[in-house]
Amino acid sequence: MRNIEEYRGLFTVASLILILIAAAPTLALFIRVPEGSEKFSELWLLGPERKAENYPFNVSVGESYSIYVGVGNHLGRSAYYIVYVKFRNETQQVPNFTMSEPSPLPPLYEFSFVVSDGDVWEVPLTFAFENVLFQQNFSLVQDISINGVVFPVNCSSAWNSDRNGFYYQMFFELWLYNMTSMRVHYHNRFVGLWLNMTGS
Amino acid sequence: MTRKLAMSKLLIASLIFSASMFPLLAFKVSASSEDVAASAISEAEGAMEWAYEAVLEAEQAGADVSGLLAKLNEAGEYLAAAQMSFRLKDFNETVRFADLSKAVGEVAEMEAYVLTDWASSEGEQRIWFTALGSAIGIMLVVSGSFWLWIFLKKRVQ
Image 1 (cartoon, rainbow over the protein chains, first blue to last red):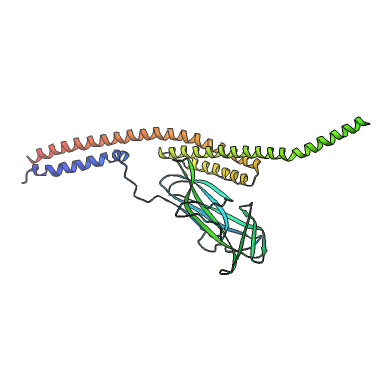
Image 2: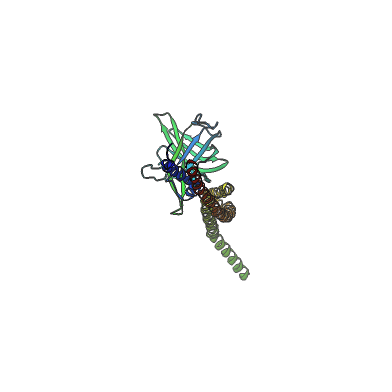
């Protein structure tokens, strides 16, 4: 018969494991495990059926077009975002990704909202063109209606002979509130929608 | 007759003077309403930022902030509407939306502070209960192991 003392070590280890299990809930309150996942935000556009297809492209005056704009938060906390809707022709500046600078163009429409961590925000956006002038090699968009609000833009575009059209871009910039500077900063993300302005 | 003529000349002169001053006065009134609108926006932005920071604090304290996030989004919608009205030079609407945003933001901020306090005291209580549970568990394991060891030892001998 084996002596019970031979099992002393095994018994002690088993007891220590049980002690650790009993202490685990309290230890979990104080020990912070560093989060390994990357922190980032997403910005996207979807077509009228809320899918990544059938985006408006050939547009004309008086017609109404729908898209969806969405933001996903993976920053590990609730985040305060602003999405600016801007409009430009082919020669005007888009945001500078390398310099992390927004486009200098003034915003038209804007969304201001807070998204909790791991959650998404998605809203429909309807736009229409009002008062567009065509003159030989130029077109001039005077007004755009976005979600029922009419904005004067007076943006002209020259005829693009390579792509056969008058091209404009509606683009969306993502801005984020920074708690340290207590200001909203450009979050270096933007998405755009190319539009070919056709006659009415 | 001369007096009457002088009076009518004076009247005409004062009318011309008033007419020439009108654009200046109109500009001043417009500029002042623009200033009021800009200041209303600035206050609404401040209220939104304070509310957001208060909600974040409540969230970090472990409170359920879903209701507060809905309020913040309502304040954000009004703030965006105020900004767009300002760009379109509709200063009355700017002030109206900015005031709405500020009011909702301030309510959210107040509620966030209450939730933070509640969550902090609840969190403290949870820590105490957990620590007590662990302590009882450890004592049970230690004494249980000790008595089991004694029992087994006696049985084998």
